[in-house]
Image 1 (cartoon, rainbow, N blue to C red):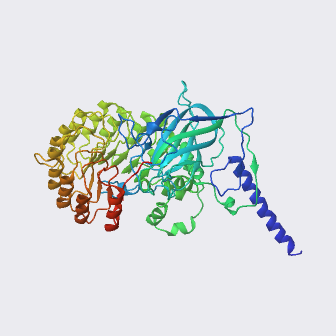
Image 2: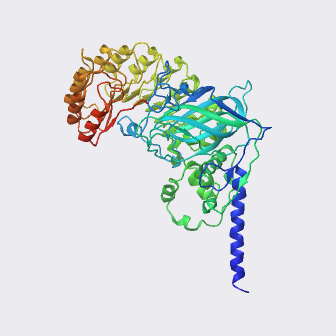
Image 3: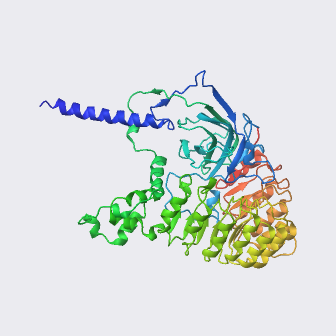
Length: 600
């Protein structure tokens, strides 16, 4: 046979593989990456007119820079038509998340990262927006007015938040995703990612963001949803074969496939058991455990279905000491938790952040899981009720860290149960409805607290009383977050510093090891306070005096000369600190990131 024929056969097979891949990609409506060669041309026909609408309501979100009883810098600014765009700069009428960069991960109060987090899950915050009409989305435009580039995922939900009869089955589909990338310009832009086509109409859009590469806070003004009432016809334009089309399926699809295995009844009896397991029989049990320990949760689910030996390793409770379920929030339900129960007897760190919304996880399902977690040290949740918190307090007596950030649906009386957790060292109550009586009870019984976050807790009436109790009971406290508390006065700060009078000056003298201090929008900070910090708090690393009017460049220079470890200084909207002063300080102290925002 001529050698040409085998070559032709190989080329034919290669071409066939390319066509198969092309067909699969087209069937999925894949349009999310710019390097794909399949391009959507789903233009609306006259009979299927395009609907353009702004968000009607902000349904849910993880954090925001503003206060709960204000509109400045809050997520609620995303509802309706643009307030600022196309202007660029720092405006209070925009939506701003609470953090940016890596500063919050570098401070002493930061939690350790979870093990076994999939490398491609990099979302830090989210916001969910409801629109008036359900449409098949053909475009999502995001109006970014300051430091763009934080949005890394856009999702659509099949549930209609305005329907009187909630759907029993809720689906989330990723319209577009991308790894965090740094956008060098801080100017306003209209972000128009190329989204994929989905097979259901939606009026609920979710944005997920990662601000770790940004130099300052990102600001969003509005979100525009383009769509059609009827499902558009997908038109394909194919060009030359792209080698990228031969890659594996996208991360999200692979992971969702693996997580789906948690929702199915699976018996190890169906697995084969051969006469031997090859080289695996020669490896120590501990070594196989170490190898398996590098797998993500979906990969564990897949590997457990290969043979009985690997099923045994994948179901070993030692593999689930760190259990991070946050990346799989869209798929997790009661069946998933039931499947995991037998494996979770040794869980010490459990992250359920972002999970359980819209009834995916019931009270009974959550309670059955928690009843097995006797060794639990860390727990993060977002969607639970009073019964769940009561179960936690009774079944997890050794709990040391509890993160209830943005659990804004918990009733005030539910927080009384936390006082039973006397071993707590870290407690995050950001954006919760805890009241003063419950918090005083917690502080009285939880004397081991080292990190306490009370940011945006608007139900607390008198922070001076809280500060007095903290000063008297929490002698081991290392970090205290009083973000957006507006009623703490000089007496309260003096109590925190174990002094009598003097406000921030006395605070600086009493806390020489202070490393992070955010005095955002505090109009009473003056040169005297900055000089006291320079003289007494030489270990200071991060300082935010945004919005102060009585601080001069001279006092800041003295501070920078004294605090050699200082890495972040925010002087935005400080009336005495102009751009020229910032440039001069930057030139003298190049290792310090001096932040000053602007408005156009």
